[in-house]
Length: 426
Image: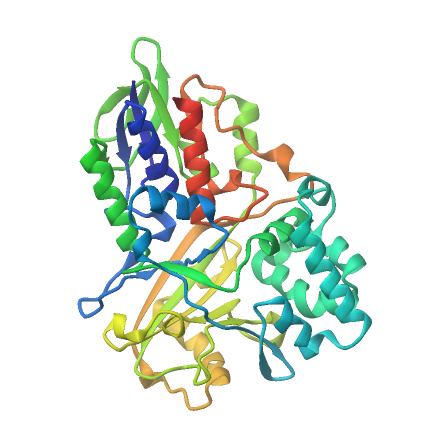
């Protein structure tokens, strides 16, 4: 069987891996000149490692991702350091990446609030009944069970930061999945995620998978005499096709999909992302903090600041200190139209809050990456809104991060849904 896969991200490559092993002829089409999708990275000449454009890490619970790496024989290249995440309270940063640290956090107050926080955390870790949780918003559930102080100090800023104007609409199953999967140790790949993606792609090529980079797909149609047809530079026929793009791009590529399926694709909400990465001459967080959760009501112009070289040693980047400053944003936000220099100027006052000695001349180089599709927004009873992987057009399949629900987007679930799609296509 001849199969086409649209997209060389982790979903597309994972599906290709299984479909090729099943004996099929597989071709991957990728519009970019590199593999890896949203988990791709870039590398300066004097760096040994790449840096991810949109920042990624693995949890120790990421069984799909880690299982694939073992199958590929690359498990010796996985690293799980123990970095430190901190949260702000009254102008001071406190460690906040475990239940123990959270219970010590002064923003929770005393007595009943800490008991309720601990109870909520324990319940969400133990329960697997996410379908009951998707019937109510995280805003309502947390306010009721965690209490007003805990909710407004801990969980509300997270929801606002992630989902902006939609924060009151997000269902509680999303929060459950986020807490359920987290671990204090975070994983990366020796050389960076791009190194892993390149090694994965090379193993696919060695097995006979064809990967066509820099190839834009114009349309996908079913033609009477030719079956499923992919139109790129020229038209090609395939027995089956898997699309691993965003729901809106899927709708654009396949306008012949039935109206109800198209409507479902177009009604799915998502947030975009703008991420600025800097290489610095000096360390920003002298305490060695890695991930700063930033409350927007404190005037920070971004959701999170991450000092990557407090996680991965800066020796891997030629001695540069690598810092991320990023945010999930609605399309149309001014950050999408700002130049790199304008965004840097907007962020500089915030950098001085992390280190009063910070000066602009610490900045050696800046990169800014933007995407329209970064964070799906799961509404109440969202499972009813998920498009089926097998579309109404015979032989056409769709797998995206909007369908990994109730889990949050990430490479682990990209692998899972890619392999799930492959099982349906065999």
